[in-house]
Amino acid sequence: MANREALSELIYSNGKTYSSCAKELNMSANTFTKIMNGNRKLHEDEIDTLIDFLNITNNDVKVSIFLH
Image 1: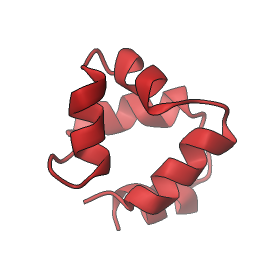
Image 2: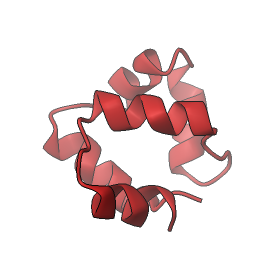
Image 3: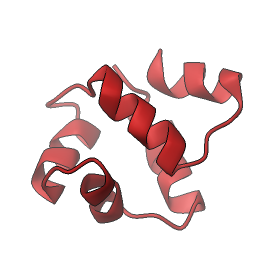
Image 4: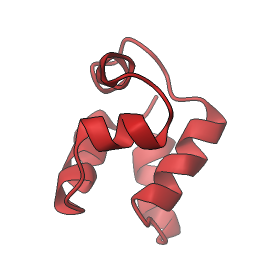
């Protein structure tokens, strides 16, 4: 389960939106909102896509967000 609060902060601090993340993940905004509300888990390939899209290079940040 992703640390949704930390992920949300990172999305907005990078000037992104839930909608832009959804588009990058090839999913609907509704599906991404379900992820952020804890109603759906991220799949491994989706995590990899978000890491690239949000330019997360620090391994500690990756762990704290996606292996929480």
